[in-house]
Amino acid sequence: MFLSALQTFLALLIATTNNKDVLPRKLAWGQMVTLIALAIVVLIWASGNTLSGSAIRQWLDVASSAQHYAIGWVALWLVSLVLCGLVVRYPLSLPLRVLLAFSAMALCWLMRWTLLIQVQTIPKFNAQFNPYTLPGGTDGWLAIVGTFGLWIALIIIVREALNAIARRMQHG
Image (cartoon, rainbow, N blue to C red):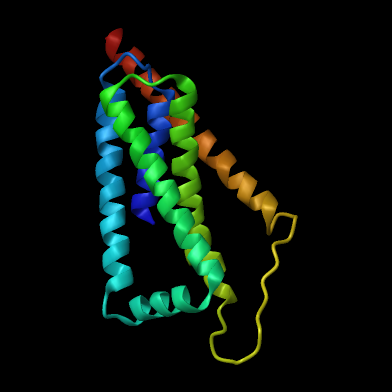
């Protein structure tokens, strides 16, 4: 989960930096390396000969929703990787950089949702059906929307802190 959060942080920095600088390209390289490391870690984990590795493979075989989540992971990972590749080669417009940030945030959110919430629907020690419903209040959709708000707040704080440091260094 750390790698998914790190690639999201880098994507948010790319979206907020000046497009003509060298910094977005360096950040995009960092995000690409993080995305590749994330893919390697997930592949090793899912194919590993551990209890969690066999459980995830069994879940993918049994539950159609798990297959949908896996497809979502791969699709969002590919979109983020392709957009990073474009940032490395060309200066992207603001809408494409924002699309990169949204795809990275969506990947991070989907991974957390799958690993922390969706796995709670799997029966642990009984044979009964344990449905999970997503409420509309602070325990459900409102919390999800709030998480995106926290990401936006984080990037604003970091950007303003970097601007303050740059101004202080510039003026001595």
